[in-house]
Every structure is written in C-alpha cells, then in structure tokens.
Length: 246
Ligand code: BGC
Image (cartoon, rainbow, N blue to C red; front, side, top):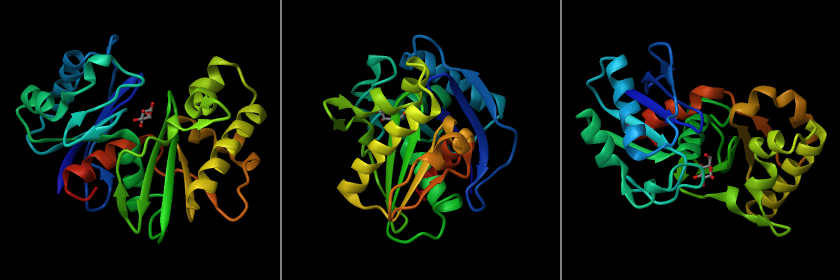
C-alpha cells in the first residue's frame, strides 16, 4: 500500500510517499519549515501544502511531537499549547479532505526502525530514543508498539531527562561530545535499570553523528546502536501506521 508519510518536527515538516511493503520512499522528501508559532491551523496548512505538492489522494500518516490517543493530541511539550486536547485527526482530515492517521513522532520512528531498520528481526523488547529538541521514546515488544511511553520526561537526579540529555540541551549548554555522552549514558543506564531492553536504538538528527558519542556510551549487557533510517524514520513510520502496520 502507498501512503503519504508526514513528519512534524520542531524546525521542519517533511513528507514523502512511502511504499509500506518495502519501506522505500517513492519520491524525494519535501520539507517546509515549521511555522512559528506552531499553531494547529498553521501546521494543518503546511500538511495541506505537502498533500498538494505530491498531488496526493490516498491515505496519509502524520507524526506529532506529543502524546496522541485516538487522533487527539494530549500534550505539547515543544509545540504550541493549543494542541492540547485537540482532535488532530479531524483537523488534518478536514484540511486535506483525506483519511489521516496521527501518532507520536518517536513511536513512528520506532515502528519504522523495528520493521525496516536497526531493530529489524529483533525479538523481545526494543527501545528507541530520539534525541532532538526533546527526547522521544518508543517501546516495541516482539514487533508490537506500546504507544506514548514519554520516557523523555523521566526525572533523574531531580531533573527532567530531556532538559539535560536532549540534543537541544547539548547545543544550548554548548556541551562537548564527552560531557553530553556522559549524560546520555546516565539516562540510558536508568532506562536499562527500569526495563532491561534487549536492544536500544538511538535516533533523532544527532544519530548522523553517532561516531562522535556512541563509542562513549556503554551499557553492559544491552547493545546500543544508531538508527538506520535517519531522517526518514518518522515519515516511514507514519505511513506504516496509516497502513495499519504500526
Ligand atoms: C514529547 C514527546 C516527543 C519527544 C520528541 C517530548 O518532549 O513529550 O511526545 O516524542 O519530545 O519530539
């Protein structure tokens, strides 16, 4: 099945048609800067623009950087607060005239990595973390997603994890790779203590530079690997969810 996957991020909204059987993009990705403020109306207009760009008439999958339950966005840590309690599925559906599925951004990336990327064929508990503006999390057990885990907001030593260990924190506090890797290590040790995953996948834009920090992260007994699909994971996962494979 072919689905238009759209990934809503803090700085850009990206989309591409996806063949959900192979996980391959059927056309070049198209990116439009995220409007500021990122109000529901402004973001819906961009989603509409992407649909028009690809002259798309089929199903659409959209990621959102917050909790999504039955198409309703429940939190908005890094986007406009007007999203809280909003029926995003209805909003995007009306803006595009198409059938739209909405899910959390890290959940989408996790599903894509588990199906076609670094977690492919892995049994047991796979945990994926996206390090970006915040920290997104996805748990996949034997290929099935446990949605909306929100482990970026765990409190460790009195601090919210994403305020210390996100890629945004690295940039905002001008941390060296060593210092930041130490924070990532601490965060992942906490995760390992809580749930003993059989594999941890590290994603988000910073995973392109995995060689700079992953060699400094060592969780004895749990392999930690970089994401394989990089900035396509959200788009592919959104499409998989809309195809009923998420
Ligand atoms: C949000 C998550 C999201 C993550 C990455 C967090 O602040 O609460 O829902 O997955 O950022 O965007």
